Length: 182
Image 1: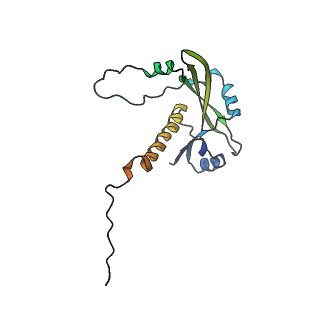
Image 2: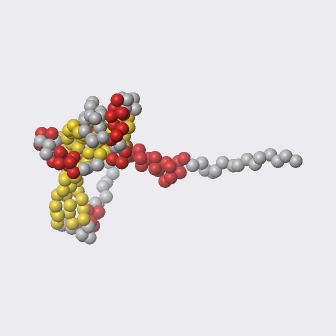
Image 3: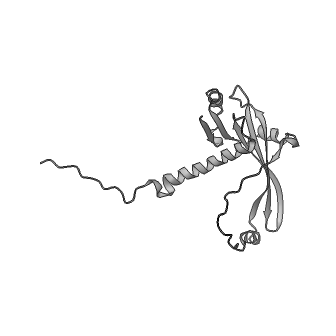
């Protein structure tokens, strides 16, 4: 089975029907356009489920003493604007992009974010993130996590290509000189 994943720059809607007919599974980020945000805002309350993210890592070994947390206080003291994620919810609906003949599964994540500056809470805002897929078996959370994992792969490829010298030989291979004919 082939699975295509990508961010919103790769959700080429003119190809989705063909990929679906060929049995290719796809999961793409999708631009948060006004029409999609309007659909998400009008979904019934019962459509939304809390998104439980797995822990980033599992600690191994003995528990260490925690260092005092000073960053948040420094941000407050210097009056920086701080964004804090309060909650995440996920829902889904059927959506047919203009370039497609059939509808696909649109997964939407709603993030409730509070904005603070110093000691003052400025306001809460809601941001929507969309994912389009033809995967009808996975849960909405699995689709979101699959698309998020793709981001980690991009970071890994970027590090291997240029940032980390894992793909370079050191010391460089010696060049053998060509034999000279006299």
